[in-house]
Image 1: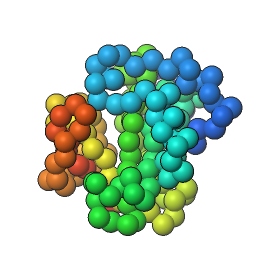
Image 2 (image 1 turned 180 degrees about the horizontal axis):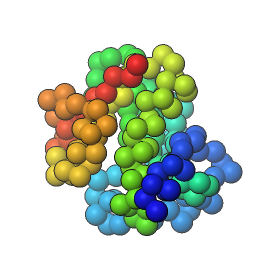
Image 3 (image 1 turned 45 degrees about the vertical axis):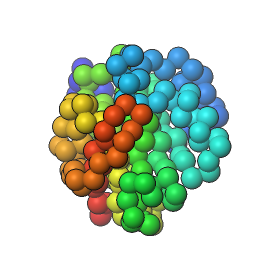
Image 4 (image 1 turned 30 degrees about the horizontal axis):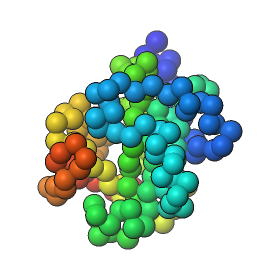
Length: 164
């Protein structure tokens, strides 16, 4: 089952036709301590044209969600004008443990390279207490930059990965 789910994982930009798919998106309270619900993230995307919402699909089902944020959104995290920020990343609770997070993070560099050819670096902030996410990102080739910022749930570690 795990390998079947991983093989079907794909990334797709969110569009209005997908609204019903995120209406029933479920995150646990613990997940919401670390990330935004897609509905809330989409509201910010509507207000900011430099934010691009993305669905993580397994087959045609929305297993996860994240936002890629360009330009000014990156500045608190990196001085690189060719960086993009990964934010509001989540995998629905029902899909946890199936390897979907790992696969989606592996797909991320090629998705960004294809969609944003000017981008050479992905930046993200991960909560200092979210060790599971830190390990996921490190295994996918992200490195801890050593930079720290204060987030809504405490100290955030800034991770980076260069894209070929």
